[in-house]
Length: 261
Image 1 (tube, rainbow, N blue to C red):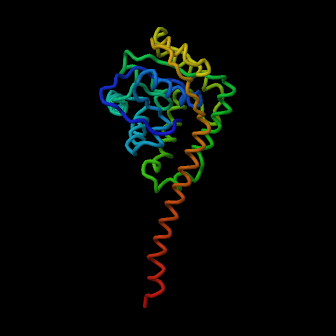
Image 2 (image 1 turned 135 degrees about the horizontal axis):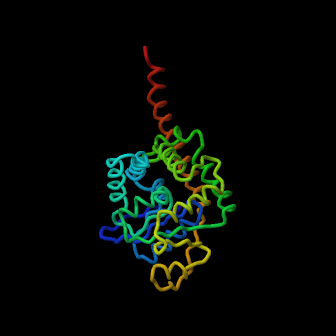
Image 3 (image 1 turned 60 degrees about the vertical axis):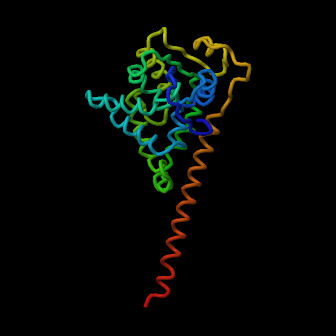
């Protein structure tokens, strides 16, 4: 999860489907793609939590029709994906990582790059995501925040997507990790599929993209710290909004009760 939401640049050619699961270095990977492709990258986790309300509502609509059960469902998914990703050079993280066939239908020339890491380490790190996204009080706390009031609904449709694709609810195990790798292998031609560990740095990524190696260090962004920071930021923001609401209500109702006949 990155620092801030990306902004689309009209006319940007879409080139890469980042199909790595959350907590596989997707934030570092997104920044690396931004540098190599010289265009904005759509990181799902960041856009859902930091971008305008239309972003998260669009993904809820997409996932509410997934998996497509009719041609009209598929059309809704395709139309919303096209609108959401127009002006971006790549997309990474969920929900896009679980929509590979749909994205390949939309971008048949795109390269699919799957960020990977040690399965056991991945399972441990996913506990951070689960803990931050399933707090029981989120719906109430986040309600005063535009966009984030839809976050619980977003998590619900994400969970449904995950169960459909990988057959597993929380607590997540290595089963989801391996099922996702199989999902990628089944749906992507081998010549357009790359499994990539961000620990390997620029070399394999640049080779796959046909780009020279930049003369700068490979970006290193801690996804876990970013998730914790954003969760605390949003909860604090929501509580402050509620405090303001209660103070305003108090300022209106107390004088009325005191001075009423």
